[in-house]
Image 1 (cartoon, rainbow, N blue to C red):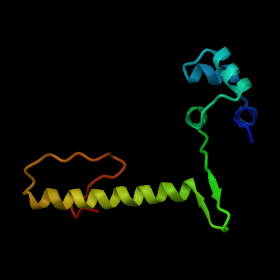
Image 2 (image 1 turned 180 degrees about the vertical axis):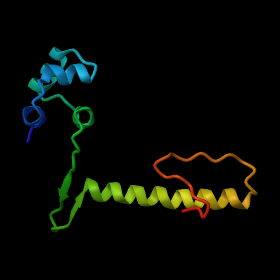
Image 3 (image 1 turned 90 degrees about the vertical axis):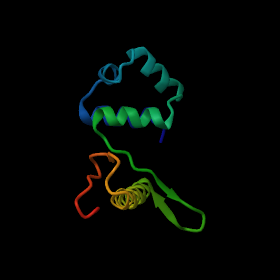
Length: 115
């Protein structure tokens, strides 16, 4: 499916004109129309469009050997790694006698037990 098709379907489903989407993205409508007509929109730009509209995009990869991977799986792996890193930082902070200030994203708040 082409990026223009995706944008057209999403805008139609949400009842949003592409001109409104362009304005929400801080673009001139003609710039968005040109990108869609030329199929020159990058995956990152498509993601930005969908983010502005509040739509999640999931990418599924299917390999020749039958294995599959999805962006949801990759996101879960990333979150797991970040949580492990947070615990590591917490334990380092504890070992150093809390002498340093440690700030971690509010997505992964540190509790008293480091979890």
